[in-house]
Length: 224
Image 1: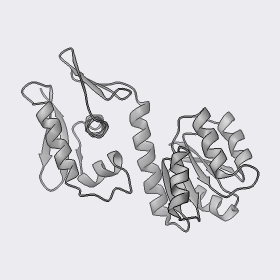
Image 2 (image 1 turned 180 degrees about the horizontal axis):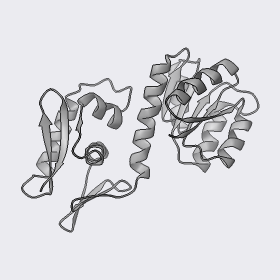
Image 3 (image 1 turned 60 degrees about the horizontal axis):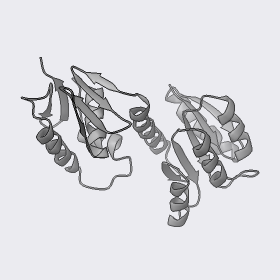
């Protein structure tokens, strides 16, 4: 369960978001404008903020910039403005994702869960697994006393697999967790990155292997 904030001046939107996310087991706090939202951010352990752009007192742009100054949490901008310029502005101010009204509750849930998973990689700290250490802050992997720096996506892919060692993860789930909900490229990009990881970490040298589970996805297995 995560503590989430929805800041929107439309009561029915707040109610929709709250009901949708509470059904997923989250605790949802509400704010009718940016000033109220800032107060909530200051006193509550908010882990993700859903922010509407057009609000009285303090608008979504200002609130987004403020949140970025005081907290390291995911921000999902929620607005009726679908123009590219508004999306770009929000992303430049520090928003992590953007959802245009009207929206399907299922899409809201999917985007929020993807944001929370990606941020947990950063927050979980060093991952230790059978002699393997992964450092999210530097995208480094340590084994046999040596560290190897990886490109961000390769590291996030390896971290995601290692965090679920022994479980098979589908390509779709890996794409959503590593590349994001809106990724529109070929799902084979996962295969390309897996091959790069296998080349860099051969199983006869390192204490793990990434196994292909035909028709299902990939699984990281720790060497006995």
